[in-house]
Amino acid sequence: MESLYLADQEKGNDLKVSANNASTESIQDGDIHYSVTEGSNSGTATYQDARGAPVEVQSPLGYSVNSWFDLPCGYSNRDPHDSGLNLSRSRVGYLLSQSTLSVYMELASYFPSRSGSDVVYLEQAYPKPQYFFPTVFAIKHVVFSFGSSNAIVFAEYMFGLAGASYTDWQLKAVAVAGYTLALIVVGLSTKWSLRIVLAFGISIAGLVVLGGHTRVSDPFVNWRHPWLGTSEASAYGASNAMVKIIFSKQNPTKTLRWSAPASLLIVTVLYILVNVAYFSAASRQEVLDSKQIAAAIFFERVFGTNGASRALNVLICISAFGNLIAVMINISRMLRETGRQGVLPWARFWTSTKPFGTPLGPYFFQWVITLIMILAPPAGDAFNFVVDLAVYPGNVFLFLLVIGVVIIRKRRSRVGLPRPEYRAWWIAIIFATLTNLYMLIAPWYPPNGGADGGDVSFWYGTYMVVGIALLVLCGVYYYFWIKFLPKYKGYELRQTVIQFENNSIGHKLVKVPKDEVARWDREHDAAGNLRQRPWIP
Image (cartoon, rainbow, N blue to C red; front, side, top):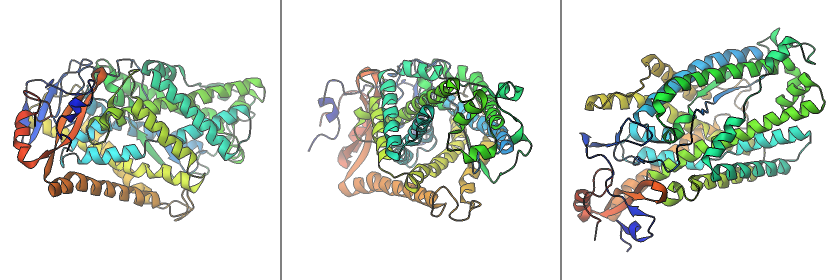
Protein backbone atom coordinates (compact mmCIF):
# COMPACT_ATOMS: atom_id res chain seq x y z
CA MET A 1 0.00 0.00 0.00
CA GLU A 2 1.26 3.48 -0.85
CA SER A 3 2.72 5.34 2.08
CA LEU A 4 -0.05 7.22 3.80
CA TYR A 5 2.18 9.94 5.12
CA LEU A 6 4.73 11.75 3.04
CA ALA A 7 4.25 9.97 -0.25
CA ASP A 8 3.59 13.42 -1.70
CA GLN A 9 7.29 14.17 -1.27
CA GLU A 10 8.09 11.41 -3.74
CA LYS A 11 5.63 12.55 -6.42
CA GLY A 12 7.63 15.47 -7.73
CA ASN A 13 10.14 18.12 -6.85
CA ASP A 14 7.51 20.86 -6.90
CA LEU A 15 5.49 19.24 -4.10
CA LYS A 16 7.03 18.81 -0.70
CA VAL A 17 6.08 18.64 2.92
CA SER A 18 6.70 22.02 4.44
CA ALA A 19 8.92 22.64 7.39
CA ASN A 20 7.32 24.59 10.20
CA ASN A 21 7.09 28.12 8.84
CA ALA A 22 4.76 29.43 11.52
CA SER A 23 5.80 31.55 14.44
CA THR A 24 7.34 29.68 17.34
CA GLU A 25 4.73 31.33 19.52
CA SER A 26 1.94 28.89 20.33
CA ILE A 27 -1.34 29.67 22.07
CA GLN A 28 -3.72 27.00 23.26
CA ASP A 29 -7.36 27.28 24.29
CA GLY A 30 -8.56 23.84 25.33
CA ASP A 31 -8.05 21.63 22.31
CA ILE A 32 -7.79 24.63 19.96
CA HIS A 33 -4.21 25.53 19.03
CA TYR A 34 -3.62 28.97 17.53
CA SER A 35 -0.86 29.45 14.99
CA VAL A 36 0.60 32.94 14.64
CA THR A 37 1.79 34.05 11.21
CA GLU A 38 2.42 37.47 9.74
CA GLY A 39 1.77 37.78 6.03
CA SER A 40 3.86 40.13 3.95
CA ASN A 41 0.78 42.16 3.01
CA SER A 42 0.06 43.29 6.57
CA GLY A 43 1.92 44.32 9.69
CA THR A 44 -0.76 42.58 11.74
CA ALA A 45 -0.23 38.93 12.66
CA THR A 46 -2.92 36.40 11.83
CA TYR A 47 -3.98 34.32 14.84
CA GLN A 48 -5.99 31.36 13.66
CA ASP A 49 -7.00 27.86 14.58
CA ALA A 50 -4.03 25.84 13.39
CA ARG A 51 -6.30 23.25 11.79
CA GLY A 52 -7.37 25.83 9.21
CA ALA A 53 -5.62 26.22 5.87
CA PRO A 54 -2.10 27.59 6.49
CA VAL A 55 -1.32 31.25 5.95
CA GLU A 56 0.73 31.88 2.81
CA VAL A 57 3.34 34.37 4.01
CA GLN A 58 3.93 35.60 0.45
CA SER A 59 0.81 35.63 -1.72
CA PRO A 60 1.35 33.44 -4.81
CA LEU A 61 -1.39 35.48 -6.48
CA GLY A 62 0.63 38.69 -6.25
CA TYR A 63 -0.35 42.09 -4.88
CA SER A 64 -2.11 43.61 -7.87
CA VAL A 65 -5.23 44.85 -6.08
CA ASN A 66 -5.37 48.58 -5.48
CA SER A 67 -8.57 50.46 -4.65
CA TRP A 68 -10.95 48.15 -6.44
CA PHE A 69 -14.14 47.09 -4.75
CA ASP A 70 -16.96 44.88 -5.84
CA LEU A 71 -19.89 45.63 -3.57
CA PRO A 72 -22.92 44.01 -5.16
CA CYS A 73 -26.23 45.26 -3.82
CA GLY A 74 -28.60 42.60 -5.06
CA TYR A 75 -32.26 43.44 -4.95
CA SER A 76 -35.23 41.46 -6.11
CA ASN A 77 -38.95 41.99 -6.30
CA ARG A 78 -41.83 40.54 -8.21
CA ASP A 79 -42.33 43.69 -10.26
CA PRO A 80 -39.06 45.53 -10.88
CA HIS A 81 -40.79 48.42 -12.62
CA ASP A 82 -42.23 50.21 -9.57
CA SER A 83 -40.35 53.46 -9.00
CA GLY A 84 -41.45 53.96 -5.40
CA LEU A 85 -40.55 50.46 -4.29
CA ASN A 86 -37.20 50.45 -6.08
CA LEU A 87 -35.99 53.72 -4.59
CA SER A 88 -37.29 52.87 -1.12
CA ARG A 89 -35.67 49.46 -1.07
CA SER A 90 -32.39 50.95 -2.26
CA ARG A 91 -32.26 53.10 0.86
CA VAL A 92 -33.21 50.22 3.15
CA GLY A 93 -30.83 47.94 1.28
CA TYR A 94 -28.02 50.39 1.91
CA LEU A 95 -28.49 50.05 5.68
CA LEU A 96 -28.64 46.26 5.42
CA SER A 97 -25.54 46.24 3.24
CA GLN A 98 -23.54 48.49 5.56
CA SER A 99 -24.33 46.28 8.56
CA THR A 100 -23.26 43.13 6.71
CA LEU A 101 -20.18 44.92 5.39
CA SER A 102 -19.12 45.87 8.93
CA VAL A 103 -19.31 42.20 9.92
CA TYR A 104 -17.11 41.22 6.97
CA MET A 105 -14.70 44.02 7.83
CA GLU A 106 -14.20 42.74 11.37
CA LEU A 107 -13.71 39.20 10.13
CA ALA A 108 -11.22 40.40 7.53
CA SER A 109 -9.25 42.27 10.21
CA TYR A 110 -8.89 39.03 12.19
CA PHE A 111 -7.40 37.22 9.19
CA PRO A 112 -5.76 39.88 6.97
CA SER A 113 -3.46 37.37 5.29
CA ARG A 114 -6.17 34.92 4.23
CA SER A 115 -8.24 35.18 1.06
CA GLY A 116 -11.50 33.39 0.42
CA SER A 117 -13.92 35.28 2.64
CA ASP A 118 -16.74 32.97 3.82
CA VAL A 119 -14.56 29.88 3.43
CA VAL A 120 -12.06 31.21 5.96
CA TYR A 121 -14.50 32.73 8.42
CA LEU A 122 -16.73 29.66 8.73
CA GLU A 123 -13.63 27.47 9.11
CA GLN A 124 -12.39 29.62 11.99
CA ALA A 125 -15.74 30.29 13.69
CA TYR A 126 -16.81 26.64 13.77
CA PRO A 127 -13.76 24.38 14.24
CA LYS A 128 -15.92 21.59 15.68
CA PRO A 129 -16.81 19.06 14.48
CA GLN A 130 -13.40 18.99 12.87
CA TYR A 131 -13.53 19.44 9.07
CA PHE A 132 -17.35 19.62 9.12
CA PHE A 133 -17.82 23.16 7.86
CA PRO A 134 -14.91 23.00 5.39
CA THR A 135 -16.37 19.78 3.96
CA VAL A 136 -19.99 20.93 3.70
CA PHE A 137 -19.11 24.38 2.40
CA ALA A 138 -16.63 22.95 -0.11
CA ILE A 139 -19.23 20.59 -1.58
CA LYS A 140 -21.85 23.33 -1.75
CA HIS A 141 -19.47 25.83 -3.32
CA VAL A 142 -18.04 23.39 -5.84
CA VAL A 143 -21.49 22.26 -6.98
CA PHE A 144 -22.87 25.79 -7.28
CA SER A 145 -19.82 27.61 -8.65
CA PHE A 146 -21.37 28.11 -12.07
CA GLY A 147 -21.86 31.56 -13.61
CA SER A 148 -24.46 30.60 -16.19
CA SER A 149 -26.91 33.37 -15.27
CA ASN A 150 -24.29 36.08 -15.77
CA ALA A 151 -23.23 34.54 -19.07
CA ILE A 152 -26.83 34.37 -20.33
CA VAL A 153 -27.41 38.01 -19.37
CA PHE A 154 -24.25 39.01 -21.25
CA ALA A 155 -25.49 37.13 -24.33
CA GLU A 156 -28.90 38.85 -24.15
CA TYR A 157 -27.19 42.23 -24.03
CA MET A 158 -25.07 41.32 -27.05
CA PHE A 159 -28.15 40.44 -29.09
CA GLY A 160 -29.83 43.60 -27.82
CA LEU A 161 -26.84 45.60 -29.04
CA ALA A 162 -27.15 44.02 -32.48
CA GLY A 163 -30.91 44.51 -32.51
CA ALA A 164 -31.30 40.90 -33.60
CA SER A 165 -33.64 38.13 -32.54
CA TYR A 166 -32.24 34.80 -31.41
CA THR A 167 -33.05 31.19 -30.71
CA ASP A 168 -32.26 29.43 -27.44
CA TRP A 169 -29.20 27.74 -28.91
CA GLN A 170 -27.90 30.95 -30.45
CA LEU A 171 -28.21 32.60 -27.03
CA LYS A 172 -26.35 29.69 -25.42
CA ALA A 173 -23.58 29.82 -28.04
CA VAL A 174 -22.92 33.51 -27.39
CA ALA A 175 -23.04 32.90 -23.63
CA VAL A 176 -20.41 30.15 -23.95
CA ALA A 177 -18.23 32.37 -26.14
CA GLY A 178 -18.45 35.28 -23.69
CA TYR A 179 -17.64 33.12 -20.69
CA THR A 180 -14.72 31.51 -22.54
CA LEU A 181 -13.29 34.93 -23.36
CA ALA A 182 -13.62 35.93 -19.69
CA LEU A 183 -11.79 32.71 -18.74
CA ILE A 184 -8.88 33.62 -21.01
CA VAL A 185 -8.65 37.12 -19.55
CA VAL A 186 -8.65 36.08 -15.88
CA GLY A 187 -6.45 33.05 -16.54
CA LEU A 188 -3.64 35.02 -18.13
CA SER A 189 -3.33 37.89 -15.66
CA THR A 190 -5.03 38.94 -12.44
CA LYS A 191 -3.61 42.46 -12.74
CA TRP A 192 -4.98 43.06 -16.23
CA SER A 193 -8.32 41.43 -15.50
CA LEU A 194 -8.78 43.82 -12.57
CA ARG A 195 -7.77 46.74 -14.76
CA ILE A 196 -10.45 45.73 -17.25
CA VAL A 197 -13.04 45.70 -14.48
CA LEU A 198 -11.86 49.14 -13.34
CA ALA A 199 -12.17 50.50 -16.87
CA PHE A 200 -15.78 49.38 -17.20
CA GLY A 201 -17.66 52.15 -15.36
CA ILE A 202 -21.27 53.24 -14.98
CA SER A 203 -22.85 55.93 -17.14
CA ILE A 204 -25.24 58.27 -15.30
CA ALA A 205 -27.76 59.84 -17.66
CA GLY A 206 -30.68 60.12 -15.26
CA LEU A 207 -30.03 63.78 -14.49
CA VAL A 208 -30.01 64.58 -18.20
CA VAL A 209 -33.34 62.81 -18.62
CA LEU A 210 -34.99 64.66 -15.74
CA GLY A 211 -33.62 67.92 -17.09
CA GLY A 212 -35.80 67.52 -20.16
CA HIS A 213 -33.02 67.77 -22.76
CA THR A 214 -33.89 64.44 -24.38
CA ARG A 215 -36.50 62.82 -26.57
CA VAL A 216 -38.47 61.61 -23.54
CA SER A 217 -41.89 63.25 -23.75
CA ASP A 218 -42.95 62.76 -20.13
CA PRO A 219 -40.10 61.91 -17.75
CA PHE A 220 -42.37 62.06 -14.69
CA VAL A 221 -44.94 59.47 -15.78
CA ASN A 222 -43.66 56.79 -13.36
CA TRP A 223 -43.51 59.22 -10.45
CA ARG A 224 -47.19 60.14 -10.44
CA HIS A 225 -48.08 56.67 -9.12
CA PRO A 226 -44.77 55.39 -7.73
CA TRP A 227 -46.24 52.36 -5.94
CA LEU A 228 -48.34 51.05 -8.82
CA GLY A 229 -47.87 47.30 -9.20
CA THR A 230 -46.01 46.84 -5.92
CA SER A 231 -46.48 43.36 -4.53
CA GLU A 232 -43.46 42.27 -2.56
CA ALA A 233 -39.74 42.77 -2.40
CA SER A 234 -36.67 41.33 -0.79
CA ALA A 235 -33.20 42.77 -0.31
CA TYR A 236 -30.33 40.33 -0.58
CA GLY A 237 -28.07 42.89 1.08
CA ALA A 238 -24.45 43.05 0.07
CA SER A 239 -21.20 41.36 0.84
CA ASN A 240 -17.84 42.93 0.33
CA ALA A 241 -16.30 40.84 -2.42
CA MET A 242 -13.03 42.61 -1.67
CA VAL A 243 -12.45 40.35 1.33
CA LYS A 244 -12.31 37.36 -0.99
CA ILE A 245 -9.07 38.72 -2.44
CA ILE A 246 -7.87 40.62 0.61
CA PHE A 247 -4.47 38.89 0.71
CA SER A 248 -3.73 40.44 -2.69
CA LYS A 249 -3.88 43.90 -1.13
CA GLN A 250 -1.26 45.68 0.97
CA ASN A 251 -2.40 46.86 4.43
CA PRO A 252 -5.98 45.74 3.76
CA THR A 253 -7.69 46.66 7.02
CA LYS A 254 -6.25 50.16 7.13
CA THR A 255 -7.36 50.81 3.56
CA LEU A 256 -10.79 49.21 3.80
CA ARG A 257 -11.75 50.92 7.06
CA TRP A 258 -12.91 54.03 5.21
CA SER A 259 -12.81 53.17 1.53
CA ALA A 260 -15.18 50.18 1.73
CA PRO A 261 -18.09 52.06 3.37
CA ALA A 262 -17.47 55.01 1.04
CA SER A 263 -17.53 52.68 -1.97
CA LEU A 264 -20.81 51.18 -0.85
CA LEU A 265 -22.32 54.65 -0.49
CA ILE A 266 -21.14 55.58 -3.99
CA VAL A 267 -22.59 52.37 -5.43
CA THR A 268 -25.92 53.05 -3.70
CA VAL A 269 -26.08 56.60 -5.08
CA LEU A 270 -25.26 55.34 -8.57
CA TYR A 271 -27.89 52.62 -8.23
CA ILE A 272 -30.54 55.21 -7.31
CA LEU A 273 -29.53 57.49 -10.19
CA VAL A 274 -29.62 54.64 -12.68
CA ASN A 275 -33.12 53.73 -11.48
CA VAL A 276 -34.16 57.37 -11.80
CA ALA A 277 -32.88 57.28 -15.37
CA TYR A 278 -34.83 54.13 -16.29
CA PHE A 279 -38.07 55.21 -14.66
CA SER A 280 -37.88 58.66 -16.25
CA ALA A 281 -37.16 57.36 -19.74
CA ALA A 282 -39.96 54.83 -20.13
CA SER A 283 -43.26 54.12 -18.46
CA ARG A 284 -43.83 50.96 -16.50
CA GLN A 285 -46.24 49.62 -19.12
CA GLU A 286 -43.78 50.26 -21.96
CA VAL A 287 -41.14 48.19 -20.20
CA LEU A 288 -43.61 45.39 -19.47
CA ASP A 289 -44.90 45.26 -23.05
CA SER A 290 -41.53 45.52 -24.77
CA LYS A 291 -39.41 42.51 -25.67
CA GLN A 292 -36.27 44.65 -25.44
CA ILE A 293 -33.99 44.83 -22.45
CA ALA A 294 -34.59 47.86 -20.23
CA ALA A 295 -31.27 49.46 -21.17
CA ALA A 296 -32.13 49.37 -24.86
CA ILE A 297 -35.46 51.08 -24.19
CA PHE A 298 -33.67 53.67 -22.09
CA PHE A 299 -31.17 54.63 -24.80
CA GLU A 300 -33.89 54.64 -27.46
CA ARG A 301 -36.06 57.02 -25.42
CA VAL A 302 -33.17 59.31 -24.54
CA PHE A 303 -31.26 59.43 -27.82
CA GLY A 304 -33.76 58.16 -30.37
CA THR A 305 -33.28 55.26 -32.75
CA ASN A 306 -30.16 56.61 -34.43
CA GLY A 307 -26.67 55.13 -34.42
CA ALA A 308 -25.76 56.92 -31.19
CA SER A 309 -28.41 54.99 -29.30
CA ARG A 310 -27.13 51.71 -30.73
CA ALA A 311 -23.54 52.61 -29.90
CA LEU A 312 -24.34 53.49 -26.30
CA ASN A 313 -25.67 49.98 -25.75
CA VAL A 314 -22.02 48.97 -25.92
CA LEU A 315 -21.71 50.37 -22.38
CA ILE A 316 -24.16 47.79 -21.11
CA CYS A 317 -22.33 44.93 -22.84
CA ILE A 318 -19.01 46.14 -21.42
CA SER A 319 -20.50 46.33 -17.94
CA ALA A 320 -21.91 42.80 -18.25
CA PHE A 321 -18.54 41.45 -19.38
CA GLY A 322 -16.81 43.21 -16.49
CA ASN A 323 -19.27 41.53 -14.14
CA LEU A 324 -18.34 38.13 -15.60
CA ILE A 325 -14.68 38.79 -14.83
CA ALA A 326 -15.31 40.12 -11.32
CA VAL A 327 -17.48 37.16 -10.31
CA MET A 328 -15.00 34.64 -11.75
CA ILE A 329 -12.16 36.19 -9.73
CA ASN A 330 -14.17 36.11 -6.51
CA ILE A 331 -15.41 32.54 -6.91
CA SER A 332 -11.93 31.33 -7.87
CA ARG A 333 -10.50 32.62 -4.57
CA MET A 334 -13.13 30.74 -2.60
CA LEU A 335 -12.59 27.54 -4.60
CA ARG A 336 -8.83 27.81 -4.14
CA GLU A 337 -9.25 28.26 -0.40
CA THR A 338 -11.48 25.18 -0.11
CA GLY A 339 -8.78 23.26 -1.97
CA ARG A 340 -6.12 24.51 0.46
CA GLN A 341 -8.17 23.24 3.40
CA GLY A 342 -7.43 19.68 2.34
CA VAL A 343 -11.01 18.45 2.10
CA LEU A 344 -11.04 18.29 -1.72
CA PRO A 345 -9.05 15.79 -3.79
CA TRP A 346 -6.27 16.87 -6.15
CA ALA A 347 -4.78 19.61 -3.96
CA ARG A 348 -2.40 20.77 -6.70
CA PHE A 349 -5.29 21.37 -9.11
CA TRP A 350 -7.05 23.75 -6.72
CA THR A 351 -4.02 25.41 -5.15
CA SER A 352 -1.32 25.87 -7.79
CA THR A 353 -0.91 29.27 -9.48
CA LYS A 354 1.48 28.07 -12.18
CA PRO A 355 2.34 29.32 -14.82
CA PHE A 356 0.70 32.79 -14.87
CA GLY A 357 0.28 33.46 -11.15
CA THR A 358 -3.46 32.77 -11.43
CA PRO A 359 -5.56 29.88 -10.04
CA LEU A 360 -6.12 28.12 -13.36
CA GLY A 361 -7.63 25.03 -11.71
CA PRO A 362 -10.57 26.87 -10.10
CA TYR A 363 -11.05 28.96 -13.25
CA PHE A 364 -11.16 25.88 -15.46
CA PHE A 365 -13.58 24.14 -13.11
CA GLN A 366 -15.89 27.17 -13.15
CA TRP A 367 -15.76 27.16 -16.93
CA VAL A 368 -16.66 23.47 -17.21
CA ILE A 369 -19.56 23.55 -14.76
CA THR A 370 -20.86 26.81 -16.27
CA LEU A 371 -20.85 25.29 -19.74
CA ILE A 372 -22.80 22.32 -18.42
CA MET A 373 -25.33 24.66 -16.81
CA ILE A 374 -25.68 26.73 -19.98
CA LEU A 375 -26.02 23.82 -22.40
CA ALA A 376 -27.74 21.06 -20.42
CA PRO A 377 -30.87 22.46 -18.73
CA PRO A 378 -33.62 23.63 -21.10
CA ALA A 379 -34.75 27.21 -20.73
CA GLY A 380 -37.59 27.70 -18.30
CA ASP A 381 -38.36 25.73 -15.16
CA ALA A 382 -35.27 23.50 -15.16
CA PHE A 383 -32.81 26.37 -15.55
CA ASN A 384 -34.58 28.63 -13.04
CA PHE A 385 -34.80 25.82 -10.49
CA VAL A 386 -31.11 24.95 -10.63
CA VAL A 387 -30.14 28.62 -10.32
CA ASP A 388 -32.54 29.08 -7.37
CA LEU A 389 -31.15 25.97 -5.72
CA ALA A 390 -27.95 27.74 -4.66
CA VAL A 391 -29.77 30.59 -2.92
CA TYR A 392 -31.09 29.03 0.29
CA PRO A 393 -27.92 27.14 1.32
CA GLY A 394 -26.04 30.38 0.71
CA ASN A 395 -28.42 32.21 3.05
CA VAL A 396 -27.87 29.54 5.72
CA PHE A 397 -24.10 29.98 5.57
CA LEU A 398 -24.40 33.78 5.62
CA PHE A 399 -26.54 33.66 8.76
CA LEU A 400 -24.03 31.36 10.45
CA LEU A 401 -21.21 33.65 9.37
CA VAL A 402 -22.79 36.67 11.09
CA ILE A 403 -23.24 34.62 14.28
CA GLY A 404 -19.65 33.47 13.82
CA VAL A 405 -18.19 36.95 14.28
CA VAL A 406 -19.58 36.97 17.84
CA ILE A 407 -18.14 33.50 18.51
CA ILE A 408 -14.69 34.48 17.23
CA ARG A 409 -14.75 37.74 19.18
CA LYS A 410 -15.58 36.04 22.49
CA ARG A 411 -13.13 33.19 21.95
CA ARG A 412 -10.25 35.56 21.21
CA SER A 413 -11.15 37.73 24.18
CA ARG A 414 -11.09 34.69 26.48
CA VAL A 415 -7.61 33.72 25.32
CA GLY A 416 -6.33 37.30 25.45
CA LEU A 417 -5.52 37.71 21.76
CA PRO A 418 -5.02 41.26 20.43
CA ARG A 419 -8.07 43.29 19.47
CA PRO A 420 -8.63 43.58 15.72
CA GLU A 421 -7.95 46.82 13.88
CA TYR A 422 -11.65 47.04 13.10
CA ARG A 423 -14.61 46.11 15.29
CA ALA A 424 -18.21 46.21 14.11
CA TRP A 425 -20.73 47.99 16.29
CA TRP A 426 -23.04 45.69 18.20
CA ILE A 427 -26.05 47.38 16.61
CA ALA A 428 -24.66 46.49 13.18
CA ILE A 429 -24.15 42.85 14.18
CA ILE A 430 -27.66 42.61 15.63
CA PHE A 431 -29.15 44.26 12.55
CA ALA A 432 -27.23 41.94 10.22
CA THR A 433 -28.30 38.91 12.28
CA LEU A 434 -31.98 39.84 12.15
CA THR A 435 -31.74 40.63 8.45
CA ASN A 436 -30.21 37.28 7.59
CA LEU A 437 -32.68 35.48 9.85
CA TYR A 438 -35.42 37.20 7.88
CA MET A 439 -33.83 35.92 4.66
CA LEU A 440 -34.19 32.38 6.01
CA ILE A 441 -37.84 32.83 6.98
CA ALA A 442 -39.29 35.14 4.32
CA PRO A 443 -38.86 32.81 1.30
CA TRP A 444 -41.31 30.37 2.90
CA TYR A 445 -44.09 32.96 2.68
CA PRO A 446 -46.23 32.18 -0.40
CA PRO A 447 -46.07 34.64 -3.31
CA ASN A 448 -49.20 36.46 -4.46
CA GLY A 449 -49.75 33.85 -7.14
CA GLY A 450 -50.15 31.11 -4.55
CA ALA A 451 -48.26 27.85 -4.24
CA ASP A 452 -47.36 27.85 -7.94
CA GLY A 453 -46.75 31.59 -8.21
CA GLY A 454 -42.96 31.57 -8.16
CA ASP A 455 -40.57 31.65 -11.11
CA VAL A 456 -41.31 27.97 -11.80
CA SER A 457 -44.57 26.21 -12.62
CA PHE A 458 -44.43 23.92 -9.57
CA TRP A 459 -44.43 24.59 -5.81
CA TYR A 460 -42.49 27.79 -5.08
CA GLY A 461 -40.65 26.29 -2.07
CA THR A 462 -39.22 23.26 -3.84
CA TYR A 463 -35.78 24.81 -4.21
CA MET A 464 -35.58 25.50 -0.47
CA VAL A 465 -36.53 21.95 0.51
CA VAL A 466 -34.07 20.48 -1.98
CA GLY A 467 -31.38 22.93 -0.83
CA ILE A 468 -31.82 21.84 2.79
CA ALA A 469 -31.78 18.20 1.69
CA LEU A 470 -28.46 18.79 -0.09
CA LEU A 471 -26.98 20.24 3.10
CA VAL A 472 -28.19 17.18 5.01
CA LEU A 473 -26.60 14.91 2.38
CA CYS A 474 -23.35 16.84 2.79
CA GLY A 475 -23.56 16.10 6.52
CA VAL A 476 -24.13 12.41 5.82
CA TYR A 477 -21.13 12.36 3.50
CA TYR A 478 -19.04 14.07 6.17
CA TYR A 479 -19.99 11.48 8.79
CA PHE A 480 -19.26 8.61 6.41
CA TRP A 481 -15.87 9.99 5.29
CA ILE A 482 -14.58 11.54 8.54
CA LYS A 483 -16.16 9.32 11.20
CA PHE A 484 -17.39 5.98 9.89
CA LEU A 485 -14.61 4.97 7.47
CA PRO A 486 -11.71 5.78 9.84
CA LYS A 487 -13.36 3.82 12.64
CA TYR A 488 -14.22 0.91 10.36
CA LYS A 489 -10.77 0.69 8.72
CA GLY A 490 -8.70 1.44 11.82
CA TYR A 491 -7.05 4.75 11.06
CA GLU A 492 -7.31 8.40 12.05
CA LEU A 493 -7.18 11.42 9.78
CA ARG A 494 -4.39 13.90 10.27
CA GLN A 495 -3.35 16.88 8.17
CA THR A 496 0.03 17.72 6.75
CA VAL A 497 1.23 20.91 5.09
CA ILE A 498 2.22 20.53 1.45
CA GLN A 499 4.03 23.13 -0.61
CA PHE A 500 3.76 23.71 -4.33
CA GLU A 501 5.53 25.99 -6.75
CA ASN A 502 5.13 29.78 -6.47
CA ASN A 503 4.96 29.62 -2.65
CA SER A 504 1.53 27.97 -2.73
CA ILE A 505 0.83 25.87 0.36
CA GLY A 506 -2.14 23.92 1.61
CA HIS A 507 -3.27 21.01 3.72
CA LYS A 508 -3.60 17.38 2.76
CA LEU A 509 -5.53 14.89 4.86
CA VAL A 510 -3.65 11.64 5.39
CA LYS A 511 -4.65 8.33 6.93
CA VAL A 512 -2.58 7.38 9.96
CA PRO A 513 -2.96 3.84 11.41
CA LYS A 514 -4.09 4.02 15.01
CA ASP A 515 -0.91 2.43 16.34
CA GLU A 516 1.12 5.19 14.65
CA VAL A 517 -1.00 8.17 15.73
CA ALA A 518 1.06 8.96 18.85
CA ARG A 519 4.28 9.05 16.86
CA TRP A 520 2.69 11.18 14.15
CA ASP A 521 1.51 13.71 16.73
CA ARG A 522 5.02 13.93 18.20
CA GLU A 523 6.50 14.61 14.77
CA HIS A 524 3.97 17.27 13.73
CA ASP A 525 2.48 20.38 15.25
CA ALA A 526 -1.25 21.12 15.33
CA ALA A 527 -1.15 22.70 11.87
CA GLY A 528 0.50 19.65 10.31
CA ASN A 529 4.00 21.12 9.95
CA LEU A 530 6.95 18.82 10.58
CA ARG A 531 8.62 19.58 13.90
CA GLN A 532 11.95 17.85 13.29
CA ARG A 533 12.35 15.54 10.32
CA PRO A 534 10.35 13.80 7.60
CA TRP A 535 8.33 10.79 8.62
CA ILE A 536 10.09 7.60 7.58
CA PRO A 537 7.85 4.55 8.02
